[in-house]
Length: 115
Image (cartoon, rainbow, N blue to C red; front, side, top):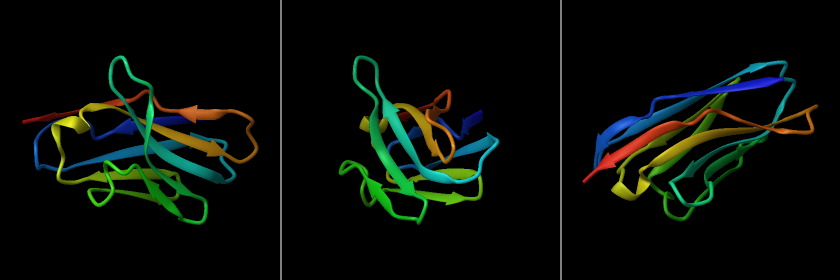
């Protein structure tokens, strides 16, 4: 099994920055894809940013130019700049790991942006 643990969430004023981290542990041969999703109450979980095994990245249009996803070994990061109140959500780390048929999720970390 693979375990994902997020950290770095918190309360920040609009225009500020936060850096989320996700540590993956367990039996890991390779990552096919790692990503960050966010979810607000009453809405479905939405993709924020993703990074593939070869480093290709993709961003939701709402965060493009403000957020940056990166990966190093068994860590994935989300640098969030120019934060807006509408970025407020629980942020989840996601991983598709080689050799497993299931997807893995972290427990989530709350990000709150005050106006």
